[in-house]
Figure (tube, rainbow, N blue to C red):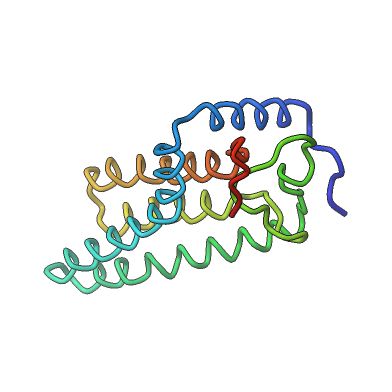
Length: 166
């Protein structure tokens, strides 16, 4: 059974994030919304780059590069399984008087763990293992953090006074 009330610290952080989002200029709100979804495509480019590089290396390297996206999908599926056990409602349903600009997912689409965080984390680790070079980890880790943070920002943006909805 889902928890009916999130911890107070979570409510405070959610409200602070929605206030920050509300104070952001519209162009930044739009950029973040696009970035949350497009950011995941960056990992596809990392997977492709790891595979392209591995073609010149021993077969084991190619196998690792080809398994990186598979492992990321497995991590995503594992996060979905954990969600069924945790069953944490999304703040957009549990925190009163806060309306996000993005439509709140339906009941049963649990919030914890974050799919974007699971995908980003798995992609960073698998690409780093496949590439085995610190420079890729240096590039992929900030991308993973950015996707996770942008997704959190987008889900917390309240409706603006104009009444804009999705």
